[in-house]
Image (tube, rainbow, N blue to C red; front, side, top):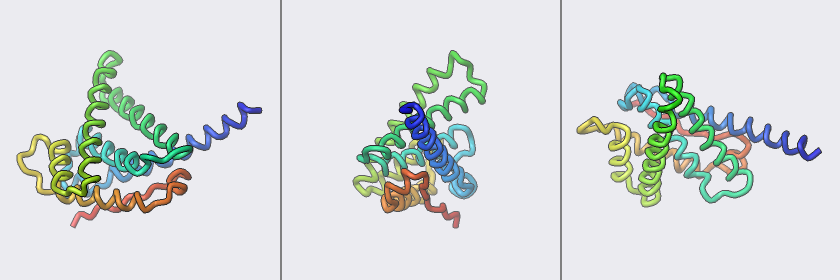
Length: 180
């Protein structure tokens, strides 16, 4: 009996996290990032945008408990499973995947610390610099970084206004990035 009850709960949570993850991926794939804001449309550029949106949800869910905390953890797990799968699709062999995963995890957590710090201090210039450093390390100047920083700050505010119950039920809404 307990197996059946807990099994159903896990299945429901799985459906919720899959829905949330799909919404995170959709937000990260907004065309304007790549077409107007010059985010590289490469595996690493897409990783940066997915990481950024995953960070935004994790930032919103920080401090929550119960189901919301569990969902946040499952989302991170799903994110890293997706990254692992993507590496394998790119042809990275079984021997190379753990090494790359460790590097990508370190990149993710380093970036989230920088973004978190800038958001907490309401530091637009600091957020802009962190985004430029991470998303376009090859560019001497990336003027669109300021627009991306504005989007991130706005997304953080929008996510903060969303009720935890709504997110825990499987709905997270990001703003639409404006290409203008």
